[in-house]
Length: 169
Image 1: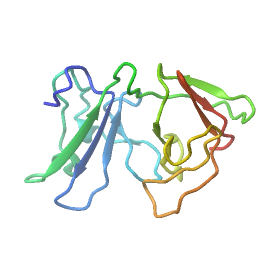
Image 2 (image 1 turned 90 degrees about the vertical axis):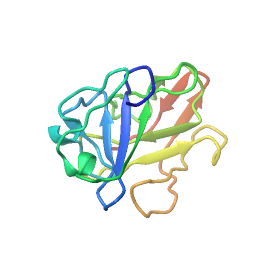
Image 3 (image 1 turned 30 degrees about the horizontal axis):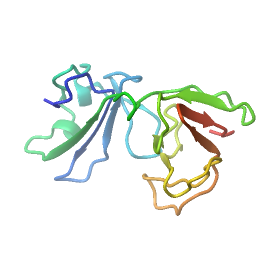
Image 4 (image 1 turned 180 degrees about the horizontal axis):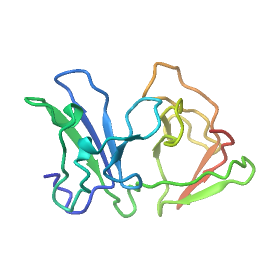
């Protein structure tokens, strides 16, 4: 049971009695795929989520040792949209830095966690409004590696969404 009362759109799960990677379910990929907090692309592993979509009350794990190892100690963080507070989604880029892809959230974001899921070698990134309080936010941290803070992004947080001004993968 996850206790959300609605179907989770994202689950971040970690077995912490040994050293596997975080296992990440995202509704846009479905229950046969997952991401990890690595630079790897999405993977097909139906054994992690037992090829079963979460419901409004439970999520299912399969036989994969990273999500359901015998005697394993596991923590899971489950996320769903919360009107005016939190939005989990997916977008398709344009490849045009000058175009400014708008992503509607319905509120002014303070924190953005993202990753390109279809290419190997793509790192996770976090952009927030506390470390850089003005738009053209470029300060970024990478939760899946030891790199120092970067400045290669150009993201604007608006009252109802994000303008994505990044040209690159």
